[in-house]
Length: 160
Image (cartoon, rainbow, N blue to C red; front, side, top):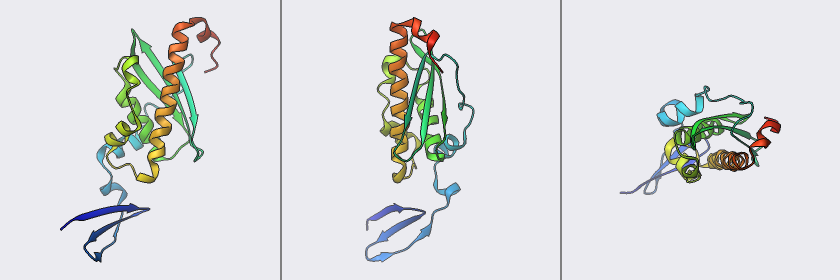
């Protein structure tokens, strides 16, 4: 017997052959510990003045993610962010920071939305765009980091 679980809104719909049962989605019990920790973690929500890299992206949903990088000796020392988004956007931005900190800048380009989704384990399918938004803002911060390294005088005039 095969069991298929399809997620729609706040319900799981397990299908057992022709029989269908609905179970109300329990936010606290049905999300992974990784998702819950990253969704409610706030210690990385910080604006950095004159960061080593800055990127800002607005999603189609209206959520905004701003990423700030601090880099030392070619390694990402810290990633902080600001967002006006939902819990899933916060979870994705925190996860991205978790995956990026300690990596070399050149290696950080390998982080993908799929990596963020896999780490969170229970990111709702309708919120995968949140992972894409966080990674996109991060890539802009990495690009800005490379530009500032090449033209270091620009950092003095950077608005953030």
